[in-house]
Image (cartoon, protein in one colour):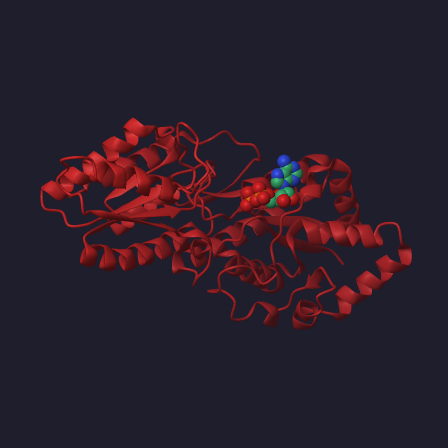
Length: 376
Ligand code: ADP
């Protein structure tokens, strides 16, 4: 009997569990096709391929294990990397961050021989399509699998960084923005009480989108993003002067969001929030400055941005992506591709699509709007 396999790879993102629930339930209810859950991303497949590809008896044992360890039994058995999902195994997980199947990085997957071994494994298990949920790196792996075999490989963008330029939104972004707004709210309380400047470092890899969206949604006073180019001493002084100017006009505190992709000229080893704290503090304390007591406090928000309760927006997007993944898999002459949200329509786009110009325009628009909404 044929099945469809799903795995989660790279950095986790809220919405992955909501996607798993949707893809499994649609498979069982609507498509009447079994769904295999792969534990620990590509690594789970690579390890299983190594164990069974050249061992006929081991392959028989694996097939037997998959058939007998369905649902919870499969999830409990840590040794088994391939699990036949049932209704109950995805019950109550929709709002939970992370992924119950686990995600992993797998360096070996850059090696074509290793990818070939995975294709061989999936064929011997009669898997007709593989669904890969993850970020840029994971989708590159998916594209290679699709190019190198006749397997259907459907990619689903999931990353809180929102750095994929072929989709308006990836799974997890909405939740991460929500978490950042919550965090900014907490920092505002203390910043206001102490008349402080808080510099908060957000995730986002090379993209400033997460910081921009969080800045727009939280009303943070300043957003510093990588797209503006590396910051030198002069640029940092200008930013500090802007904050000082606001203080002169009666502003009591400021929240500054700095994206983790921001670079400095000359390069710095420390976290961005700390580099900016020192630069700002130095500026505020220069001889004759009006606010020499103004304190700056840094915080690197880190992995708290990746967890938490999944927002309704992400749960809905997860269901829509799962629906489209199935529609593509079930098209007789359909190939491989990635689910993408474009102008609130979910589409399947080919791997390696050029960046959408609309995405850059959208980022720019958010930045301009943020500036226009400032009270400084
Ligand atoms: P993300 O998917 O969140 O961007 P990574 O960039 O770490 O995370 O990629 C996750 C995994 O995807 C890697 O550990 C590797 O297994 C696979 N991968 C990434 N880039 C490639 C590539 N160029 N070729 C093959 N596999 C890749």
